[in-house]
Image (cartoon, rainbow, N blue to C red; front, side, top):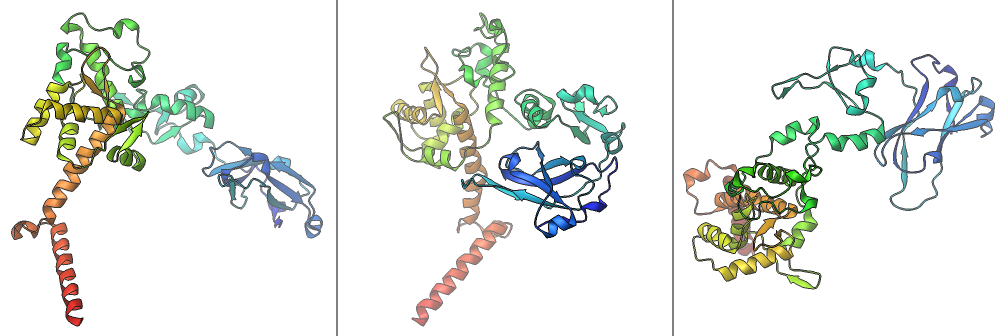
Length: 391
């Protein structure tokens, strides 16, 4: 169906584009705009067509643009034609009615007084805008951000995030708290051994002289900083998803080796993950025995520690340091440990304490959860008693 009224389009310097918002995955040439005169539209014919420029990232909503100059002045009606013959579920097209926006220059909108965050790729292209101020580690909050084109933004943004050391990561980096193990600063064994793929991006390309094991305890500063950055980078990754949680808490087989489940809430498992979440220099069997025994308040033997270490290793939560009988947390292990400890310490433990029927009344009255639970318990008892009485 043709849309009338194109003859009244405002062909000015501020209205030069025909824009259609689109979403989905499709070939840009599959969406075209056709034009016609009133007579041609009445006959169901068109006199020409043109495609759109698609500069967005699929499948998100983005603007398709076509120059109004491509449509002849004699055309009075237009229509959108979307041709899609791919029946795959991931290929679909969603379109909005076309519109002719009134354009304004960036200088008119942003001006030269507001603080602006200029991406590295466009800094020299906008000399009239004022970059945000910074002094003594404190930055001025930008009001605007100017990005490059889609491909430039996708390639440039990861360099500026918290893992790349750029300005986008300042806020995220302030939220991270990591307690380094004191043994790192005393040249403990295993300090200089790291897996290359776990190195922090800012340290990955450092000279080899900075990656060697220090010859004296005084030379361990670089290694300590490296491990601290590794821990921060691992903590900044997203939390484990449901699939990983199920794989960790259920038995599994990896490369023909059976890996017993790490049951959530099991006292030895929780004590193990609590005991080494903060260790950056690694740990061994005797250290694990001491830490877990203190946390459990009961004997924890070396044989039990060997069994737990085997479980953690086969689940991919720890890795053995080459040439040493010491183990170190992997990126996945740190994420799972944080998830287990936070959920147990902040949700389950206080929640179950408030649901305890032996909780004193004066404490229960202060808790909305305890009151709601006791009310539910009373209502269920009344409903059950009424049902049995009626029977």
